[in-house]
Length: 228
Image (cartoon, rainbow, N blue to C red):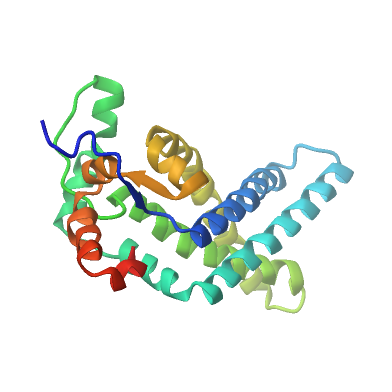
């Protein structure tokens, strides 16, 4: 039995500024996704649809302010996050070949070998890349469609509308999967939503490369702690 299996020493994985950004992102994207679907299918009365539109706009402004402020105030973390999610190696190919072992575990009750992961696994990296790209597309297209739909060229408005729709549907489709797996990884869920820390044994099991390359290095060089 590995000596790390019951090692409960806490490791800071999600600092306070990241957690606050995540709280606001969650509180703004959920109403955006719900109202976006309502605006697409239009199942309500005219007055109700107008209220839905207003809520969508308010949530969109909130999400945009959250993204802009976090980028300005925690630019180093944004750069590091981008570097992490857009990294790619043979390990990611192997992870996607078995989809992280989740289908085998949930459907067949079997455990299959998973390549060692860094701070984020390959699925989280894909989701992070979609959030970065899709979120930027939603913000830019949303503000053009909201503020200057009649001033912009008609073809541009149509194209931005399609981009807004596709990006919104992709991120909305990812949402239930993300929420389910977040709760499944309950230690990481508590870290993101509460205190920011995961037990050493959890980090060593799910993110061994992060522990090996960064956590140990930080213990040896305290000045590097800001990189975690």
